[in-house]
Image (cartoon, rainbow, N blue to C red):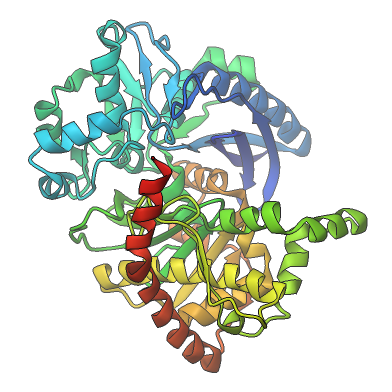
Length: 514
């Protein structure tokens, strides 16, 4: 039997499990869904035992399939949705549903926390990050204030992937990247921030027992669980990593010269850095990396692939009909339409603020805009302007990362749905002015990175960067210097549009509330 390693990704919509061989080939995978609950507007919850039921079933199915192929699982890596709050009692039982990353109920608690800690500037000094409703600390404060009868029973909190670790091994542990995402963690020194805990009256005993580096073995699958799943021998479980940090690293950002862009509904731009620097405005997220002694600094735009998805739903009925008749993807047809428009979309610009914006402009009032329409504008121009507008937005964020880290970006790696479009990849290459690459299996997301971390933990590979840099490059787009020069001029125009339109955004938002 050959050894393989497995990555378990506890995602928002479901659990994905991926098995990888020593030769860096995917040898098996499974996916299963679980429900999400919306008890009130702005509240988003899941049942942690649903995650475990699905993960346990998928692991059992995959272990049987792998054994039939001649593989045994040697190690398990964990990843998943960050920031969620799982509270456990003294017997390890779940006390309430998980409050998820996209739950907005704790906005008031976040404001009060910032005030109690001496203002945002002081918060950033403590943890090099801000405090916003998505992150775990605000969720803890909400439960303390609104459900004290539950909080008094709480003995531990865990994030989603670490609940799966607990069910596999019985260990209360997390890794440095996930701990960073709680916004109670001193990322410079890779330890909990005592001042935040003490000032906010968060009891230290509810923290996980250990915080480890991401490829460190935290324990082994318990005998009873291994027997139930069908695992043989000692199966190591490693620290793993938060999905955003791990996917950025596993998709290509293994050094300060390699920027990575994840294009899902949102767009995440991230960069591995070797030196700590101050995240002065708190706009970016500055987390411990899944590679020891390094950090991942990243930011999120809220409607990257979501802008194209909105266009498909709102304005692409004809393309959708053609796609159904021809058995093709509507996004392929839209990409072909975009190619019919010249660079610059004949003067049309699109601002992709359809869901407000987080970075580089933190503004919930921001709105999507087409500007520059004229009587000669045709649909291909509008489609291309959406692709260019998203690229400009991510370039703005990439420039912020480059300036703050003082890094020279030589390559951009892209993963996610947008990476499948050659025309979009070329737009990114020409807008950024560097080569754009896509790595094999980057579409597998964090589950690939989790498996690679497991492989490091059991000795298959020495370092994550070695494994990632050994992956095949499936797509490569070199930039055209002439096109880049044109895009530089257009990008400068794009950069001036938000400040000009900001007063209008505020007026529109004010009117919507009346």
